[in-house]
Image (cartoon, rainbow, N blue to C red; front, side, top):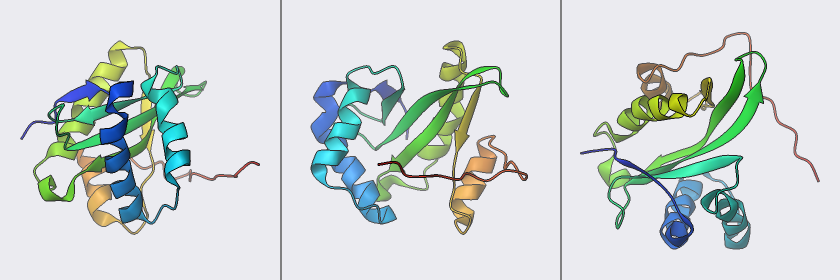
Length: 150
């Protein structure tokens, strides 16, 4: 099975909303449909702060990966953060996520991205193993911390 990537466009919103809702339900993320749509639409319309790739066939995507962009002095320029990656449960464990995580950085590097980051649940050994196989390394001295605004 191929993890062919296609940059998502505004016309993919309906398909994407279903995939994101499934991921959020699986992860226990509570978000209403209106907020979800308002968060996705700017990325589909070309906001320069991130992008969404659909994984697999255009008509029936197997999943998606959402990237957000930032700037890092430490890494020497633009960096990307994997905000979400999701593969439908029916096609998991076929190497799709791994293939996506191996191929995507190559494309991002040609666009000037210097580093790609992601976060992983400290208890999710399977996800950690996938990310390690895909070339991600833990930064032992650092942990992600967040503060909600507003």
